Image 1: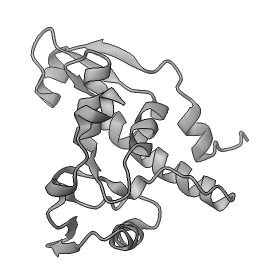
Image 2: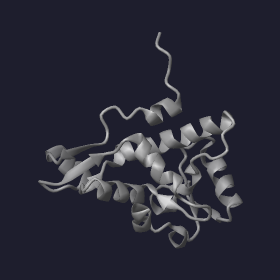
Image 3: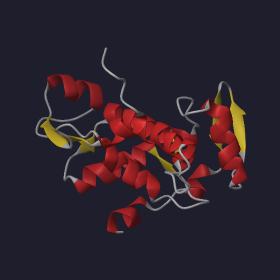
Image 4: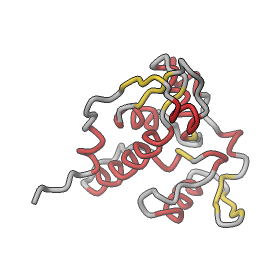
Length: 165
């Protein structure tokens, strides 16, 4: 039986990514693309590199990461599905690195879902992300079943500046 890859191995296993794909009928309908639009399927490490740039006290959403990736690759959009998966891989790889004694890990907890919502798929779930964000001064509230950062919009990093740096 083959050994299961670690999260860090998954993070650095870019396969044939990034790649640009042209829109087709299926993608057009699913992601709201028009004929001739392009979509970048990023490499996992590209997503991690963006997440690493988010300073303490600031936040970013997965959708903003997608905007950065699309601009970087001159594509119409970045794939929502793979970007979300790679955010999770970056988070899991960061925890793996921390467990092995690394101090300077990717601050994955600063990456939120759309609308400032916490990510239940992160290591330790909502509770761990909530604690890490509160430790950095963010206020978290519960709305229905979701947890979100209060006034998260005011704390978003300027993603255009991230592209330049």
